[in-house]
Picture 1: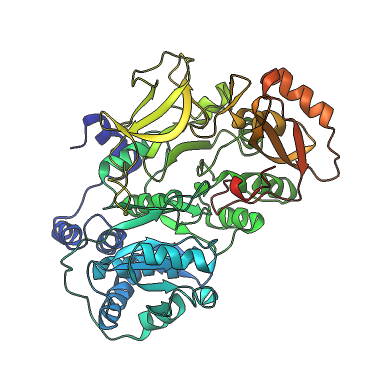
Picture 2 (picture 1 turned 90 degrees about the vertical axis):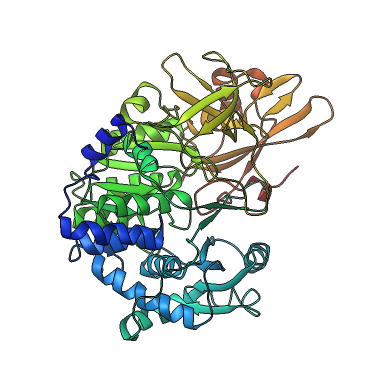
Length: 517
């Protein structure tokens, strides 16, 4: 049940609005029919605001009623093709109506939606589909060749074919499925194979958590640049459904096109991953965009460096909200503009309804300023991986896999992965702190620090550096910077130069793909 504080958050955001009595019953029926899924969100929108624009992509706009009607027909067509309630179906699509209508149609069939990463290779896609026992794949046509191995023994249909069917099919609404669709999101897989984390759907408590720290408002416009196959982009689609907001998406990220979309649609919110921010900042300084409408830049998906946070606030104003979380725990902490002004490195404070604790090895809460492992409990914490395994849990709190500490003001600082901590000559070193120090040097555009074995000290650090355009790397300067800002024992013993670093779709560096020597 939502608390009084939660109800105030929902009223302020415009989630709770008066509803005409004749519309109340159809709203209740939509939730009962489809559960807490995007299908219920679009069906509810078709009742409350049928003619308002729900989605804008490169093809054009779609209203709430159009998406609801089109996906009714698509769901019936997919049932005729043999997709049944309870089946696991892979979805490989870029941001656009193909992804959105694919999700909603599968929800209406009652199939579990397996969100596939557009950055995966063919063998990795086949492995994931086999492991999750997927019976079919819905995909953009551009991925047909990539999926050749995976679809040899599975039914497959393109989102382009579904788009045509949505306009030509004469089928009606499908029957109520006997199984409520689950949303299966893959973990990032930066240190190993990605695993599926299933969710039954968003709740009002989940919305309260987000809206208590991120000031989104109902019936406005949000540009989602972050990939919606990932939990961050998908969560903002879910929030938009609850708020009755218009969502603007583009298939591929282009910083100038994103800022033009904010300007053209007078968007009040922009959803990104940190790796996009640097390009957006450069584009904002190069172009003439009216971004005065923008109240929120919501960022998550990978670490946000202090320097990038400060520059974003300087260019865009006090609008940056950075979320720390994971596929497994969802929302853990949010840094508001005020938090980032006080400490650009902070991950912020836990939202309403979220419990966050930093625990020592004995499971006791650490005092302010003392590092420990981060544990979180919220309404969106997952129930376990689809393969039957789970994250470590303590007293109902789920381990994030990260190490951090809380300051005297209750703000969290994330130090790095608990399995990334390196012991060098008996001293604990967190590579993320070294990376943040190196990134503060003007000659460094990007960096990743990894540990490799060392006969004398147990381990030594290697810094993989991407030089800023037109700059040369002075290793002595970088070494002095780390020694001054972190610690003597945290200085990298080796520097490797690169044109770019391997990153996944959410911007996290895939360190296992870097040379390990």
